[in-house]
Length: 290
Ligand code: NDP
Image: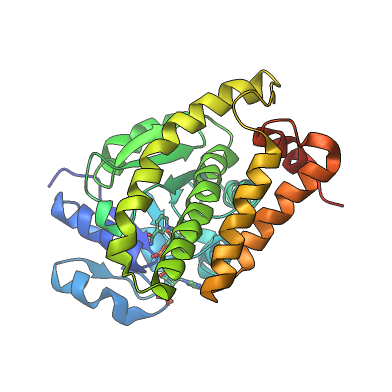
């Protein structure tokens, strides 16, 4: 086909979507997965299932990894270490920036090249050029395989440090997971009051739609170290988050998340910030917990 052949190792929902996207674009695809049966539908579409991780690695110069974390990479590539030299590993498994730097070193120590990736969309977004993936690592091999990687999503290259893609990815996830838990909490309150998730949705959407304005407003003030209580005061914030907690308690649903929120607001007030903005909590959160 003239297209770069690719190996995909790891066939969870994400790896399967990636292998399908490569097949859609006419790439030859070699697969390996710990649970071999996950390859069945892809083999039926023309992909080749390798008999071992080493065979999968040796099949192509470009190897995509989509595993649960970096530890799984060591488990899978343990027996393939002699085959790593000269090959490019694009690791789209998520982990901490530190773990991705260690993983990159493990690959380069064996003569391979490691590019870190952080996919920002669910499997349904793979194959869509509107979707985007953070990449970091050596620029030349990234540029060499950029057009092949664009079969998955568009690319957002962040620099040579292998930890950078993981860092921006984890920053996104830090916002994503807590925001989604806030949504689950709202759904639990609604449920206790006879509302379905679809009936909670409109006000959750309205609140989320207002968030970009808050994010940029406070980013500028935080960078200017301005926590003035001219727009909002932490004392008001504490009363407000307590109202949410009491609504949750009255509904008889789980208080874990909101109790932690109230705790942070209370610590801010106790530290003397009642008259400052609730953005002052960020200073509390910047401090390392002992
Ligand atoms: P899964 O957890 O479903 O897939 C994990 C893959 O890792 C499977 O192929 C599994 O093999 C393999 N695996 C796990 N542990 C081991 C091990 N010890 N040894 C060998 N193989 C192992 O995850 P997804 O496919 O959903 O995601 C893959 C990566 O993509 C993750 O890092 C995830 O954070 C990231 N990601 C996922 C998104 C999503 O919405 N799904 C969105 C953005 C990023 P087996 O089949 O044998 O269990």
